[in-house]
Length: 163
Ligand SMILES: [Zn+2]
Image 1 (cartoon, rainbow, N blue to C red):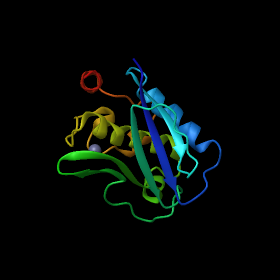
Image 2: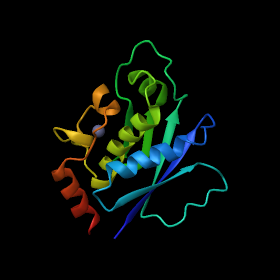
Image 3: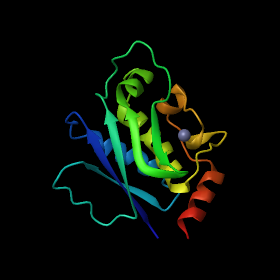
């Protein structure tokens, strides 16, 4: 059975028309071997989400283009309260864009979102040793052709979604 994750994207800028579809394609590719698929929506008072098993809010802070000289600290995080991981993802988009040197920012953003969404879906703050759920994704992982969930991560995701 398909598990639909709706991402409601909040931005301070108007993204170009290919921005969200590019992110959605990459997210669906990363989760292709699972039952998870994505719908992306720009936040709006008139938003009609359609059916969804989970709704997560993604706040893109700043413009999604390189603008910083130095990049320190995390590119994104998922908020939590009392041990429960909330459906609230924050992304520092200037930092992320600078980190990948402006190279295919939608793809890099999708990969960071794939990681943060995984935190929420499995309700786990800990990380895996490799793949999408590695603790800190490298420049190479955010820009290379190959990027996937580890088989064991896929297995526990499917287990989690089945109850
Ligand atoms: Zn993480």
